[in-house]
Image (cartoon, rainbow, N blue to C red):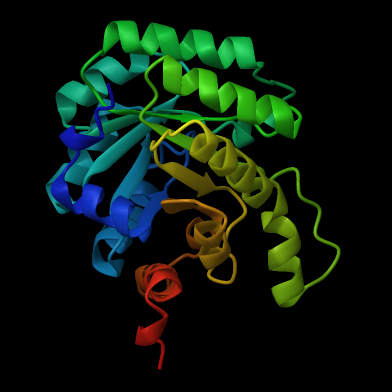
Length: 258
């Protein structure tokens, strides 16, 4: 039984409208000043969710400065417990991008086991699970199906770190988004065949140019981190987040484009 209906109404509404925007501060970003600024920008920019490293102190700090719902990400189930107690709304396994550079990978069996362990610890908390992009596309699709069986409420795709853009500018943005968009489309097609309604979140390697493409490929929302985190001031972050949100809204409501 999906726990999507336990999420705040604003999140449910945006997922249904396919205009959901999650801002990712980073699974390994424990810099409180950075996290606070990104979270404040996410709130001011109109994002629907802020994704933090699994640290209850970060959750508490963000709740002090913003009312934006909080997701916490980790690959160790026990880290979620205190974060939920501190006020996290949803938990997420992954994404795994930061581990690949360290030579650490996650097999389908490993992801499934982490999911089972997490559900055993926190059976009543909505959970998003990332499908690792370092496995073949058919295995990604198969894993997504099994994750839903294990109780994953949202399936997230990734792939930005594996993409090697050859071109600058808009074409480069498109090249970087290909892995996560491909996975999103393939998983969505299989979900439709099996009458699975769980939302799909595209994340990793996306930008204002490519977020609307994720929606076209079947995503209910997107997760964006690096295009925001690389900025060093609040005003710029807010401007980028607003542009990202507008690109999503306009992709499903083209009549609003002026």
